[in-house]
Amino acid sequence: GQQLNQSPQSMFIQEGEDVSMNCTSSSIFNTWLWYKQEPGEGPVLLIALYKAGELTSNGRLTAQFGITRKDSFLNISASIPSDVGIYFCAGAQKLVFGQGTRLTINP
Amino acid sequence: SAVISQKPSRDICQRGTSLTIQCQVDSQVTMMFWYRQQPGQSLTLIATANQGSEATYESGFVIDKFPISRPNLTFSTLTVSNMSPEDSSIYLCSVEPTGANTEAFFGQGTRLTVV
Image 1 (cartoon, rainbow over the protein chains, first blue to last red):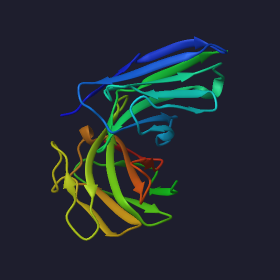
Image 2 (cartoon, each protein chain N blue to C red):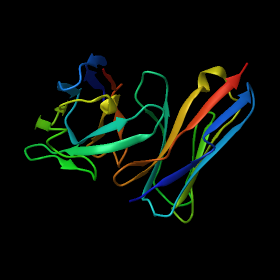
Image 3 (cartoon, one colour):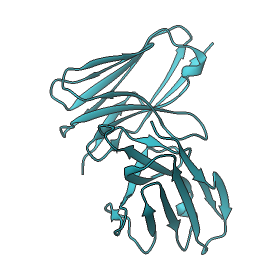
């Protein structure tokens, strides 16, 4: 079946630093989605990407849909404590999720 | 986006029993899905809940263990049957609103512990 490889699996950073995480796949996806999950909650959609090469921003978040349609990255600029959580990439049509990136921020 | 309410939010159950989880959406949606998230893991699709017909199950999941109902376009249930400790997970309902271009939205999840 389709699998997504997400890296890094965890990050420990200082407040104010920029964050970068990515997902790769051996399969082509038509849509890439990035989610954030906080403890006790379901994943919340952050950014959706629909076209190869598309670069989309949502506040301090920027994500890109790779040209080959097999990869995507998510950047967070100037991290703040509320950015803490687990970030998942997902490829669609039928959603396949990466393993997640657990982000921890030291104030 | 859609507002999704899941009940119960958490439960502790005895092995051998069954639990039915409800998912209610505030608008009619074409696609509803059920996911499992085992402790510290990512999300795995259990099945697609089809309105008016049997659910479509992913490899490794069967109807006898995870019966699903979808009586209308705003409601679905997932039952975890004959539970064992290995079924301890978070179960999540997800929807793709009609015309939402493959964006999926999630309920807050049901945290199930089987003892």
